Amino acid sequence: MGIIAFLIIGLLAGLIARAIMPGTQSMGLIATTLLGVAGSFVGGLVASLFSRDGRVFDLHPTGLLFSVLGALLVLFLVGMAGSRRRVRV
Image (cartoon, rainbow, N blue to C red):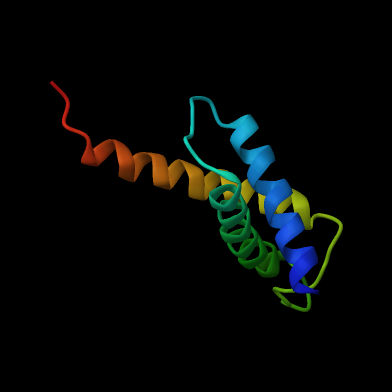
């Protein structure tokens, strides 16, 4: 898969994940793209566990779905890590 297609799928996955996740996320376009790319890696690793050939970087019809699920997981973990750093009064 080309790098441009990978970035576009990452951007779409990041935008969808941010729309699904409740609350506000103060991210720009680049951070959203990086979120989607990280979600693509996580989703690709999970999807490769269930596929027969085990290839991570192949383009599959469920690739965007697993990318969004992976981005939701990354966004949740980043939110949890960010809430621990704040001091609650």
